[in-house]
Length: 133
Image 1 (cartoon, helix red, strand yellow):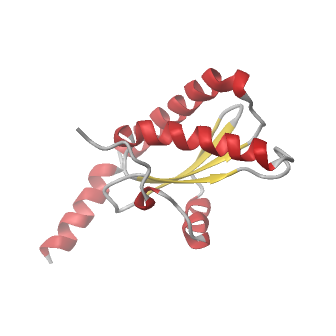
Image 2: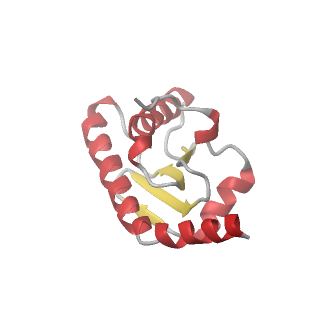
């Protein structure tokens, strides 16, 4: 059974990693969340979070949103294609919106999986040719 831990390898931490995902310019958005994504060469998805002070003034609220989104990713990470994700909160959400946020996150991930599924064989052949050389 695969582990459900949110490991350090599953996190986007450095500014360069965030910048490369933003510069790739692929984005899907919904009411509460916007997800920027970029296929990666790692065998697993990675995620970074952006919750601005304009969205929630208090750190308590920003941290709650981060915790919730981290949990959604942690549970679903084995069903996500190998992509780098930057999840940006567009509108403040609270405990009352939990189910709606969960559905929105799952829908966005499904759309990203569908869009990157066509690109996967392409990246697989590139890495396969690099291995053969």
